Length: 102
Image (cartoon, rainbow, N blue to C red; front, side, top):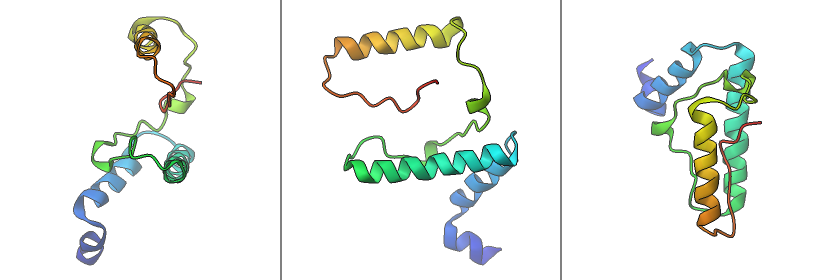
């Protein structure tokens, strides 16, 4: 066990353990890992320096993809409106939405 921890690092091992003790089905965990791999691949192809996944800030909520996002109420609804207004008013030429609801 010490060899494994030394090789991958204690913090990385704790993140892996945290992922697998989180609520959710094995299917949820597989989806999370597949999404993370896909994002990493797309990020590498983009040639950008921003939006890199920093593992120390990860807090996966692996069941979120199954929750409904259609209800227009509460803080999240207003947060979306505020963010959309900020993006519009900034006159950016390109916007990457990485936390979009379906």
